[in-house]
Length: 74
Image 1 (cartoon, helix red, strand yellow):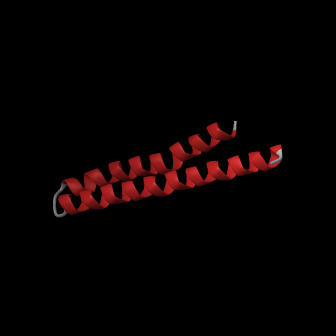
Image 2 (image 1 turned 120 degrees about the vertical axis):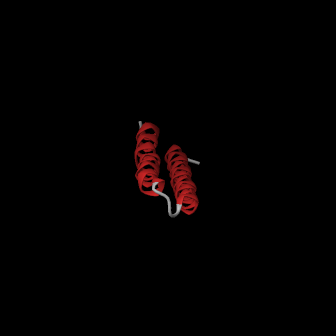
Image 3 (image 1 turned 45 degrees about the vertical axis):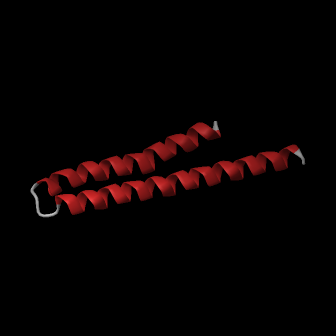
């Protein structure tokens, strides 16, 4: 295999790993948020906790993924 084909294959593998990370991370956070919603349903804590969970989910899905992609591309 030529060097350019190997680099292309490595890039595809990296992209698949990043995509898997994004999807699995989103699924985990979605499950955590839904589970918390069921447990806290009807309480005053629901409205207070949901923005915290949403912020954590947004951070891990968007910011950490962006940092991961930038670090791998350097």
